[in-house]
Image 1: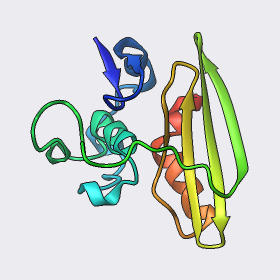
Image 2: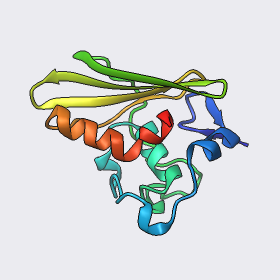
Image 3: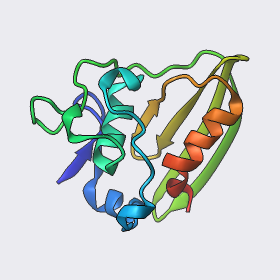
Length: 142
């Protein structure tokens, strides 16, 4: 069964996500990236955290498997890309990017060659965005 970041986007094979999500002990899991839908910029960002266990099950209030159904699925592309890192894992290519709109508006874009593509909420600085990236998405590059 594929894992879908949203109903509108292509799905990622569930087996691939199991590869991406190495088993972790409870004490090794990062804190929640957000606890309410308003903490996420897009449905796909909320879905990623919901699936990875870094957001609570309450994000899927209607229990249909999709977190924060009412959030946008639009991909943000304003500003300038200031960092990009790519890695291949099997047949899949993952890209993590940092985009800066201005000194206090920095966000991440997460992509894969199979169609996963989403942007995150804004961060107040480049450092905050990179810290968030390392905490929640760096496993895509390992």
